[in-house]
Picture (cartoon, one colour):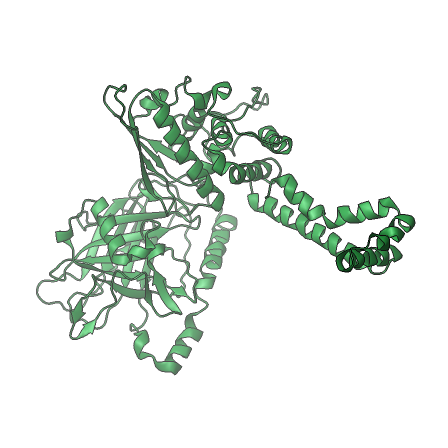
Length: 571
């Protein structure tokens, strides 16, 4: 609606799935259990791992919804089952901007809704609504006409309500053309106003209001036809349905990019850089390197806790789907007295691990990623940060390289690899929102020498040696990407793949050229004589004919790919 008017409409496929406990039957029909990991057909289905908190997909939809509602302080007696409306996976692919969870109680009344919003960066935010804050009408006349259209529900019985309305504050970054300020208002049609209703319709209108309560964006998702049951389509109906809808999910992101291009080039809208998620949201999925760094950091915290003089209990929320929560507590000892220091560390986004390895000191990482930075840049959150000096004491062996844990003997080549990592260490990428305005009159550089970081010292020690090779390779790759590839490790991986392919091609070419040379024939006769008769006289011609330079260069070409792998540290 403002600052520029813009509108568009697209067709989109939505599917509905009842989320009920196991063993529920109605009129002789048994529903799919909410404990299932997958619902729907093989070609049109949803997976539990794709919804709500990341991970625990093997527990099923109902368990994940129940766990989420418990975290939001919703008692089990307040609800009974749910109905999920979402964009399904069509032949395994889906792009799902928003999903709607309709929460019903034991009396089949719509009591709550959960709006699960995903942005294009892989981040997620669940909004739990209970209808306690009815939306106020927008103040701009144009937006009032667009958002105030009444949703007409069916004729109801037993006092069931056909509409669900609520309003809530915005705290999640969705569009680059809107900040996190403002609020949302929802007006939704109840798809099942009573149990026997057999014609469910979807009609949801979401209005984004600015901080001054002006309607800024009005988005409506509504049914354009009667709901279909895939079990009743038959073969021809299924083929017709697939041909009509298979492409819709694939063009969702291109459609978003197309409209964003129009808003940026034609409407000249201001672009807001993506802030990091808040504690109420779910960060993007982690990379394989970040999963490895998380294991290292967790074991590093374990060593810190067990070496400090004060008893600690750390609740560590990792932001890793497979291991989302860990508790690290001090082992009880008689010489340790005093109350236990409770500390919660919550990683808001896996990007924290990719940034952590750039810092030489853990305290510096925590300061720049949580304490002394803009709220929109935070990748970490902690309660009671005043306890950190006790945990990160300079007297700890982990924080003193000369008094480190039991060291591991390494080869000279391995030490060279670690030295390369130390030389490549650099600062992480600048955050999206600067804390202080830097002066352009001089170039500010870090003149400190960069020794091995505290995390490096732990990995190089006896306690962390099991992580050493994977950690060193992954960290070196990220440092190379930050220094030479604009922070994209995929470019480093592609360059590495190209080098290995070229070396393999060189070796194959060398093998092919051997058969066309006299030296190659003599080498083949020598090899055959050694294998069959163990006769060294067959090799006499090799030393009288060929030059040592030809054989050495050929060997170097053949084994270049292996030598390249050895230099990188691959076993």
